[in-house]
Amino acid sequence: MSDFAGAMRSAFGPERLRSRAPLAPLTTFRVGGPADWLIETRNSDEIERALSIARAASVRVTILGGGSNVLVADSGVRGLVIRPRGGEVRAIDDCRIRADAAVTINGLVRWTINHGRAGLEAWAGTPGTVGGAIFGNAHFAGRPIADVVTGVTLVSPEGAQSEVPASAMAFGYDRSRLQQSGEVLLSADFRVSAGDPAALRAIARQSLAFRKRTLFKMDFAEAVYISELRSGAAGHFSYRNVAYAMYEEVARKHPALAKYFRVTDVREPIDLLKR
Ligand SMILES: Cc1cc2nc3c(=O)[nH]c(=O)nc-3n(C[C@H](O)[C@H](O)[C@H](O)COP(=O)(O)OP(=O)(O)OC[C@H]3O[C@@H](n4cnc5c(N)ncnc54)[C@H](O)[C@@H]3O)c2cc1C
Image (cartoon, rainbow, N blue to C red; front, side, top):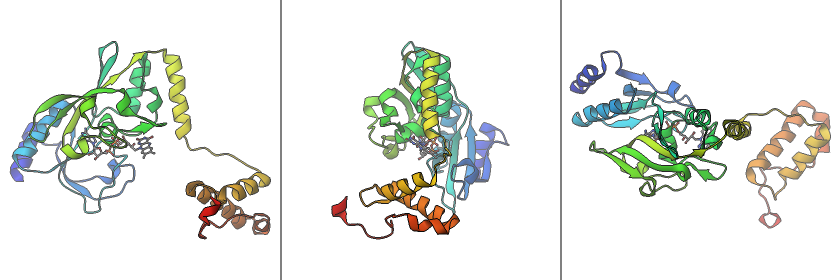
């Protein structure tokens, strides 16, 4: 292990390899323990260099993208965590662009809109990086990102770099071959077409609006109506809970009004024949 730290420090400089590095601040859920080692790489060459040093020292590697789809255990992560950062987007030709693994999906969307390239604008607001999005085949409004991927550049656990067409990525719902193969994604190529930046920006805004937390007001009659209707046995469990929570909140603030609600208690077993 000390050979590993020495090799990493001589490759990346003495400051960049961090030991016992807290991971919680690097994830959306902000929980969990430290990584034995953490390196934030700046480009694909650095990812490959870190992988190669870890492989030579038999140190386990974990890749952390934007941290929006991981829960880190309180015990932390053993071995080396590589957190790709920075990266760039570039045009391959008129209908394909290449984005490094570390590029955020929002950064990618911004680039395509600014360059008048259509195809990715609906993913505006998706947290995380290109690496994480390909790993889990991120989807929005029923459409997986695999639909617009033409190919990827991977590095295998043995250190071999390869260009892989999308058809060989075993994409499925929330799935890609990366989840089994242990390969690391260096970049992904996306299919794009010419688009008007203003029109693309409007679509991106719609996606952002869909994700935005919204405060809306309703009067008492509306609250009663929604709570009664949507807590009913025929409703989906997710909105039944919301409808019932609305009733409980009104009852807590205005106990005298609670008797006017004819809600269905979501904690009671439901008669499935009423669904
Ligand atoms: C508020 C919120 C909204 C969300 N909305 C959506 C949504 O609309 N659609 C959707 O699909 N998901 C959504 N997600 C889930 C999440 O944003 C996506 O799964 C995202 O693609 C994860 O990317 P990440 O960079 O954060 O990955 P991380 O969480 O960092 O990592 C996820 C996995 O990918 C692996 N990984 C990351 N980079 C690489 C790489 N370069 N090579 C190999 N493996 C890698 C990691 O090892 C890990 O196993 C949402 C999450 C949140 C918190």
